Image 1 (tube, rainbow, N blue to C red):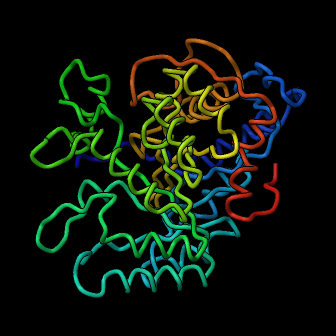
Image 2 (cartoon, rainbow, N blue to C red; image 1 turned 135 degrees about the vertical axis):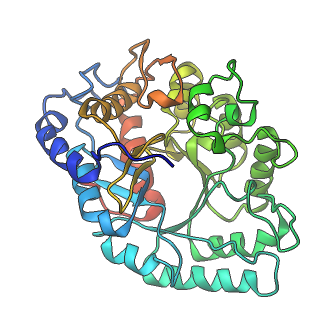
Length: 375
């Protein structure tokens, strides 16, 4: 790893964000229920409470992260990186300031005697401590192996007891399966994510001798959702298939236990805005707003994807203004929030006010049993 660029991390952006607070909170005209939100400037999003279902916050930086989020109009955020009992969960819950925290799973030793019992017990203890759900990262399906070297698929029966426990305990699962479809194609110049893969070669999963195909992983995910029908499963990153919103809509038709979030996938969704809008409007009660913002204890800030250091103020503002513009307007051909994710422009989906209310906060409040999110 090369030397880091000068740090403009969380602490610096807290000060920047506070300077923009008046813009974030003021000036937008409310649209009547059922009408599209106004085509306001991106600096003045519609004044609706926002609950970010998908962030990652190290406990040491939690107060500064909350200040940053509040300054950008996000009144509450779900930290999906809680850790597990005895490995960070206690500290993350203590630092959360009342915001929801999801526990994680320790896959070390999976397939060995006692692994399922150990992890179920941890979930029971996590629930008692105040965890609101569970997050499983993309390592499952890609890099988790049994002691004898076998890849553990998302629908592997080894996981059944764990998924059943989540349902029994009322802990919704947020699961990341796979990654952008382009990451599973050869990282050649005709790959739409060529620059991103060049900057992060470890993100490529194109080696078929090591990794399954993108479609194979989605098949495993769908079979898991079907088999664990008593467990609420949030398939993050717009179902982990934002390149195919119609496929995600069919899944939502078929599986009432399935939800999706929008984290870090506005570039893909805005690239096919009509399909994305149709999918959301068909299932407005099971779509959750998320950003995938990541706040590190080293002061790093990841804006959904890419680098944690070296940001400029305009990049941070672009991230938020483009995000609100995507959800709230029908504008066409504007820059998406995360330049590293692709060179294309996107279109807005202009969700009606009542749908924005559900996606931005009400659905997550209902899912997690939370009171109103502050504006």
